[in-house]
Length: 129
Length: 129
DNA sequence: ATTTTATTGCGAATAAGTTGCAATAATATA
DNA sequence: TATATTATTGCAACTTATTCGCAATAAAAT
Ligand SMILES: [Mn+2]
Ligand SMILES: [Mn+2]
Ligand SMILES: [Zn+2]
Ligand SMILES: [Zn+2]
Image (cartoon, rainbow over all chains, first blue to last red; front, side, top):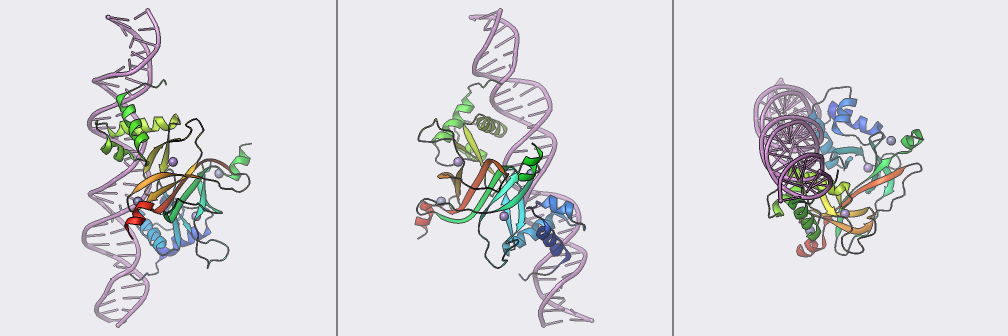
């Protein structure tokens, strides 16, 4: 399963890298300048996830959102699970720089975390006052 | 919108109260001894949520799971957001007694939390050794 | 230049959850 | 107790997100 470079892949990756928010398939489709099929976008995203380039967040709306792993800082470091924030007002999801540290009961083994806080982001709470 | 007592409501609530796991609509439908329509189950569950009797968890599979608020202990206390654990092996979701404490950036207001850890539960990790 | 096979587009399928509507039944009221 | 009110239910249809099969396309290897 060798990966190939394609315009689609690059376009989606660029979009994710330049976005400060996690994006859903349809947000990606809308924001892309080139037209890419829905199924293809999902396939590209899932491949990115398999390769550890991107991580997937499932929000309480049941939809999948995708974000680049290790944004800024040192892109070497392995990404660790972190919280996400979903603003109900502007309907965006962003990665918080807050690691998920949770002591589970004895014998439990955590492999992954999907943690989404919901509320109002800084921007929106300022606007509403 | 006064609530009425119905066999359906009681059956669903009993099931949830006696279950140690969060249940999805189809799990509920399967486990009920009486036959209840899919839409009805969802409506009952959503009403329970509105009334604060039940809380909803959305897992990474995008499905909704429902669990009684304030199980054992003092049923007076307001339920606080807590972590959930989803075992990939036995495919169950349970409420952990671990509160979600997360310091969000300045100006952010948290209203709700949906936090699901994934991995292997105690039972299943014992079995696999 | 040719071959190999990863990637894509298209349409159809799947699955979860919701909604409109008419029928039913719990509760309030006379 | 009989009647009126309206919350609840069942059914079928609908919506929306995601996946899948398959044939066509196009990277990359030879
Ligand atoms: Mn993230
Ligand atoms: Mn819970
Ligand atoms: Zn916002
Ligand atoms: Zn298990």
